[in-house]
Image (cartoon, rainbow, N blue to C red):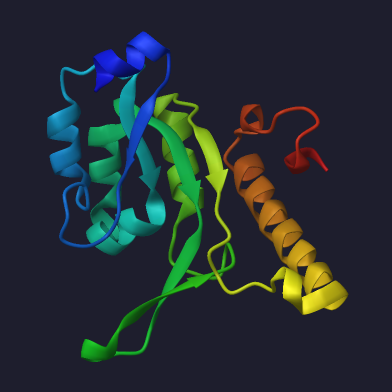
Length: 169
């Protein structure tokens, strides 16, 4: 796959995800990627799923996979319910368990600058909700951008905020 991607000058990235499939714990993904050209094949690291799979040990998995990380998915979750009824609930940034401040400090320490991909997977209004829904949608997205910008600023990662991007406003 890396050679095919090189031919077309593209990068392929496998997103880690929670569950029982390959790549849920990033250890197996890191093993497969060893020896591959990271310019053409790597990982789209999702902290949300990394914490669900690795709880407090997610930094160990990230350190192992980091040479292949080209994108970080930015979204948050919290555990809802209790006992065997425990479920994952996607929430606005800063309202859940995804420790982005710690991840951003780790990015700075490891001196890597992957792209950030902000995801809005929690319940939001749709086009059918009219003007009020659109206003709520825009307000929610701006709020998440402000939270993200604050985390980047606090971690000293201003280089992640491109000129003229929504993060600069």
